[in-house]
Image 1: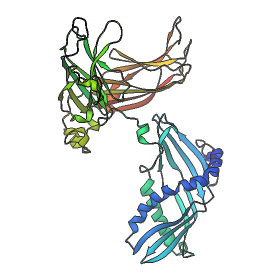
Image 2 (image 1 turned 90 degrees about the vertical axis):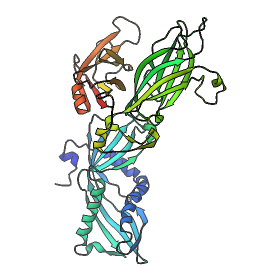
Image 3 (image 1 turned 45 degrees about the horizontal axis):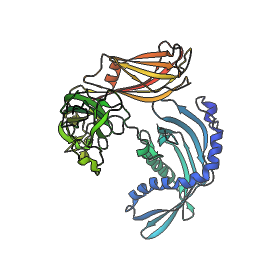
Image 4 (image 1 turned 180 degrees about the vertical axis):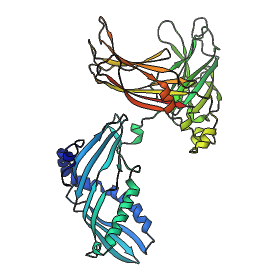
Length: 490
């Protein structure tokens, strides 16, 4: 009984009468909006036939999908651990389109009309990535898991040429082959919904090593004509805490020789911010001077020593910058991750892609085995406290403790927070502990409470490069936490 809808025959498909009503009312607008997609898809195919069989041109004379919309006979939704929504609608479309194409063959125009179109297909539709900007997804990706059923008639000069023996099957085979070449999985049609610059979700692609060597001739801020300087480092576009040197007491020419590592997401646009402060026991610390270093000036895996004049303001035209504020000496090295390694002939703004695995493997990467452990805690479900439910996450690794934001009054928090650990060797033998905690929003007795924890073996992360999994929380009745962990080598 083939006409029974999928939602009757297959319990994993949902009935979506409401969606069919929505499509019915939206169809006139969908018809107009789809014209540009149809033209952009068809015109490259038309271009392949120009010059063949004496065809001089192929153009659309009329393009309308008619007034009969497709009907969805069932919808399946897949749950994944990625930032995406995956759907599989089964639809049938017996439409009345009015599509007329004009061919010019040896200076003679021939009109071809498509009639009685029928399409039966079950595409895979993915909305990804899910983002925090309306409509909350950036792209629509459509792919076919199997060849669709396509039936239609073609009229040329008023006659139905599909009645010619053998031609019908020949044209059917060509159409199915072309559709399969375009959209049969893993190929897909991708439609951008949001501008990439506004929704980009960037992951670290390398590590910036900064050695703060020394500073000279700093400003005198104390009554004795000295200062207590220290340096803060941060990368533009990051919300991570700044890195700080130690405080050197009573000197205008401090020597630090201290090294720091910062994760880099976009070496072409990010800038290193350097601020030198005078430490004060009471009140705010005074800014002695600042500087900026664009990462695009660095050559990957090459150490560059810079001696920079400190400025009052990083704006070049500020007249206050004419006053001498001393200098700071830094050593900078940008090390891309091995799987993101690019081949360069010079600075970063002259990059050229080299996809050879052999070339990547033979490139010099230093130090050997160093890399970044990137932990993303997406969210949790069914976490329940006996006294309050204001959950936050505590990440504990090698004695270092990092905390997420707290979300009030919920048992299903969504954090979507990243935690970075830059390591000299792969953490193959280590475990990382993630605790879900709850805290009263006002001071009171027993203000903190554990809602469960999980210990993750990082050997699996190092071996696979990535794990994306939902873990059942220990000491929790039904609690589950979603963790995405990655290991990237430089």
